[in-house]
Image (cartoon, rainbow, N blue to C red):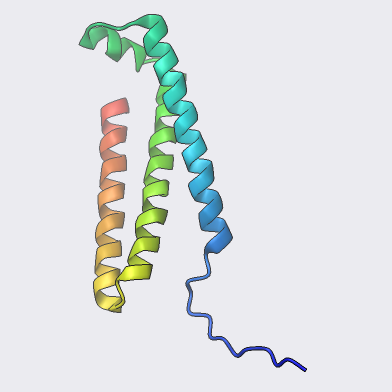
Length: 117
């Protein structure tokens, strides 16, 4: 008879959820970039004012927000997993994770200010 292994789960059991987040946000970003390329090819904006007019359309603003939020989430999952795998001292890992969260939130706020400011 085989005895079950006594394993201690330490909190690094994100597996499937992280894998799905990475794939879904990657698909979201590819779709957005594809649509953006189509719009730029169709409308061919040549000046700053034309680009600004293109990005003033409400649904493009919303799609851009979804893209950027997905990009931040994608980056967070990737960076967090790398830090959990390679930075073993808890204090250093936690400090780097907090710095990453603060930076990503700052970038998201900056993006919102640019798009809706």
